[in-house]
Length: 376
Image 1 (cartoon, rainbow, N blue to C red):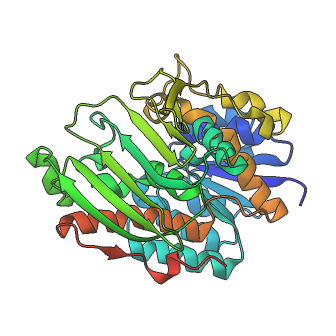
Image 2 (cartoon, rainbow, N blue to C red):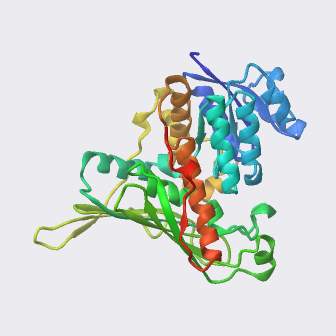
Image 3 (spheres, one colour):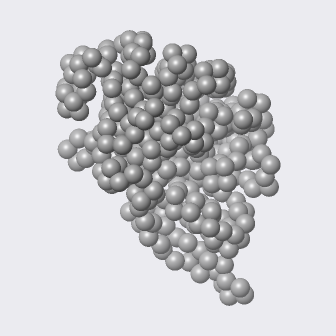
């Protein structure tokens, strides 16, 4: 297989990925799926997707033998079902976050992936953002020294989003802050302990039975003495959108900016002088990509004229989209162990699910299930 033939489902935010796959030298978009036929045809016409690859039902797209892989961007509640359907149909899966909304569904996806022999990759944006890649490069070079502690947050005002978000437990969509703290050293979480704080409006709290405005979780990692803290809010908390990632090392530490548009701060350990803080410029990492898709780290489908909240609120997701596409393609065509693989995806997702359970149980320690701790 020289080119991966991809079908995409969920074409709101998901439309962002169509031109990236089309421009990649080792991929081809052969199918799109959307229930509204008029909208489907409008988008397919825009991107020259052939009439034979336009589907209004997901089942029909999965039955297309020309489709090697599916990229899933459907609503959160459908991720598990759509992933399992694709794997059982013999398709590779790239799925937006989170993997699922229950531990049981995460296990089903892990089992379906192993049974199918196909690739599953959760498309976590933060671990391919330019900010994360900047820190990862320093870590891999040894510039940070010994990692002592990690911290990440994802704070967002979800008012105005689709109704299924209303009252959602904050940690049920925690992958943007779990991914980077586990990914830096490529570790798995072994235990979590979380507390809930504050209260959201009553009409939202009753939907999922989740009262908390903010959930804050400590993570213990497998085979590591490093701990991490993550915190998450969705409603009734005054905070500009922020996906942050702080790394504290023995030689250097990196702190995400407090306000969007500012530069991050690097602290360098003085010996014996005091630590020296300085603002640093984070470079783009387009050079890691094939030339044909390098421009997508700075632009995409969505712009000032065509906006999507998940893209604009996330600051373009740090230029991560072409990196996600490229690493998924490599995982399928080259057997590359792209991050996160299916077990790592399950581990990241289960952190958030079990963290919320911990908060609801007054901070009870929760242990990761065995299927999310065994990477083959």
